[in-house]
Image (cartoon, rainbow, N blue to C red):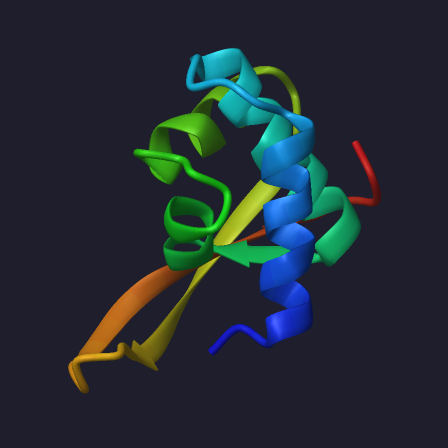
Amino acid sequence: MSTPERIGAMRQIRDQHQGLDARTQRARLLQALQTMGHVTTFEASRYLDLYDPRARKLELIKAGHDIVMTWRRVVTESGATHRIGVYAMRRGMT
């Protein structure tokens, strides 16, 4: 699960890029990837306020960013185990 520090950092990114349009959401996701190393789809949805992180990731890839996805299993607050995506930049800070 996300630490309080990690959640706080993502909320700061969310607050720096206010708005719900796709461009702003892409900016939030890109900054989080560049500064935090990786972002789960759960974190992106919940703390970065991205309605559909998958779409924003695909748009960033189309724009030339080298983003990879792996899978992780997490237990949510309800106690259920979910398989979630983990996004990371493959090469440096593109």
